[in-house]
Length: 227
Image (cartoon, rainbow, N blue to C red; front, side, top):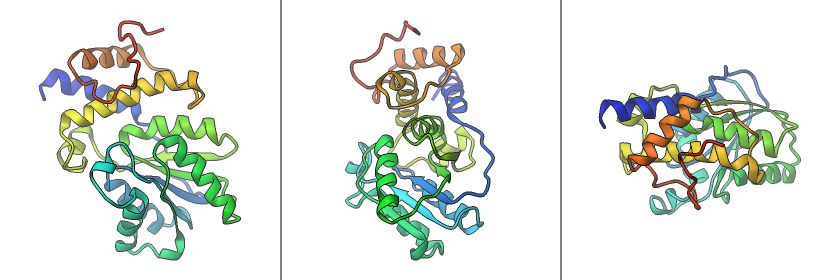
């Protein structure tokens, strides 16, 4: 990846980070994906005593259905248990396929269990923090949340954290797609509005023109139009 591309992608990476400070909560909600370091981060927070309950939410997503035969949540829960998180402190939601379903299906699971946590720590990949926050606030506004992720730089994430099946270009393309969703999804009722600075959207436009468009949703937006 050349320096200009890296700088543009890092700008989008920085925008996606919410930079919340972790605080005590009623439950940790781990939004599962291809990134197993997120499972480790959730386990770390539980073992440090930030919440007494940890929920893993995720079935077979667009990427993981071609990587693993088991649901994301079951895989992540197994990782957490290998790190000494007790099974009795874990709930598994293994049917959701996107962020909205993560929230909706977790709500249903907790209701079925007769549980009503009010404060959540939501754990996600670094570049999915903002979209997870926006989705949660739209779909579960009566709850409080903090969003966190593995504390890692963009450069280190590409080198050490991203799933080995994904190239650096794949990661940048996913980040670009997530930024497009932050722009488009509020009008579709999926998320709350999030301001996108002009320089961040300009970086998006350049990266799309450079071919990092694999994960854009259809129909593709006019990248010269920021309205």
